[in-house]
Image (cartoon, rainbow, N blue to C red; front, top):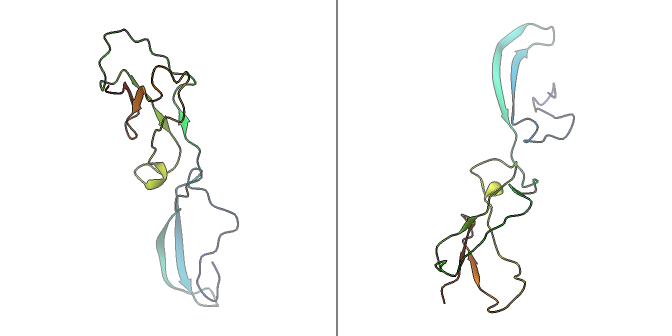
Length: 124
């Protein structure tokens, strides 16, 4: 703490994933050390930065479909997470299909629900 201004200063970079909050006890003192006020609890919350890379829960997802698999009904759910603060925009993950190989018989044979990660055959 700066003794003249009272500003709290950090001596190194903070990372919410390492430590989300700090609890301090602060006193207000005269120059001679006489305590005027305190101790006063101070709770410092470290703001989350969108600095974590999402990871899928599996390296490879596999599914086996039969001819009777109904379009629009999910047959596989993808799961992913990151270490950013839960419930914030930084941890709001969305799924998208980037490519399909082979592109036959239709280049958009599959649909992926962005929020749930539900993979299904596209309706014809």
